[in-house]
Length: 539
Image 1: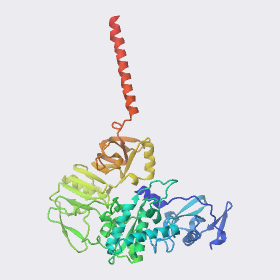
Image 2: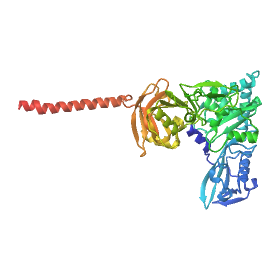
Image 3: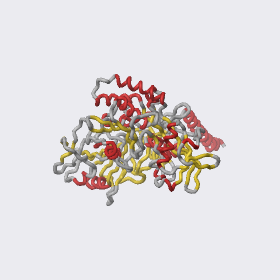
Image 4: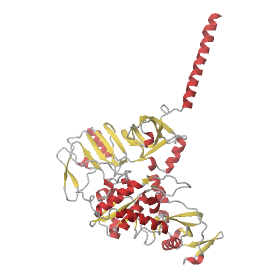
């Protein structure tokens, strides 16, 4: 997923369409450079003014000059790569404040072609997501769909919309004839022009549905993902149609999310929910809509737990469960049981297995590994699309209190630079990539189960890692189950990939060559025997 989210953050680079801007059309000083006129931006306000001017006049590029000293946070890109904007309102750092999704909602980026003495000459490039005519046609389709559920309660109507989106939209970046857009608008999704899209398009469609239904909603973002927040019965909840897309339905855990799950969407750049609450008055529910908060109770010798469910690919607090746990429910505010709770609980009686839900937070403390190593048992780290298993008897103890990032990127989530490396190593053969967030040795041997592309279902595959020299190293072979799962063991992490085993995927041509080689070898042996023994005996 991060591969396409990176495209979302960088946005499609458009070639300048030759639409130069008249110097008198915008109240910003201009400067000449190599025969071309550029707006000489004095700061952020000029940048937004130039962008708005371009949008209002439906331009695809506005030539500008950037002087670094006028933009002290220029290198942080907090304002420059603002990507999708609705210029009816000021751009916010952490989320997109939509009064409404409109033809003013655009993708933007900067394309610079000359760097000189702390300044740049280039263009603010603008990509229009929906044209006025497209949005008008799309709204008719949205209204017709909403009319089908006009009698539904608000929660049921929102659920229906989320289900509709998941049924009609697919996550991905399938190339269209003549190329593909990174971000597609409401019209494309509603008419089937393209339904294979990234998270922002899911968020656009949900947002527009909410607006047509008259419900309060915003598009929220962190540094690599976009989703929605919506008001229901006076509280705000998260809805993530991208992660919740199960093909023909909407995963319930991504519908009406409370802060117990939404905290996993907070990233290093800040707390988007705190920002929404401060700026927009959004009061977020502690738990999912209709759910009671849960907390764990502990008895002597037992580890506090909560049931481990299928996780998300987001970040947040971890949940731990063991064979000796009991749960109780309470309507009071609750705190999550985390991996660190194992270390503070009474551990005089150890469970045979400890399971940690790493779906919302893949960072696992090495103290946890120490505890398992010293007391035995099995440690299972469970996410939605992968699972780690460690035998406590095969773990090494550590004195450090640092953490191990157990995240695994699968398929399209693998970084583009890593994909470029694997394209060369795979030698033109079909492969499935995956990469570990942690590179290097593990605390011990781990059994890892990952979910791979269905193209490999039921096949025997060769499993490769990529070493520090950039070479592919065969780690072993394995069989992909009917459920698309592959299990293997390793004691180290890096960039990995699989491809169909050469021992089980030989072409007819290769088989004939091998047979021919074997026959030739037998003939040579027979000839040698004849001359060495038979003819010598005759002589």
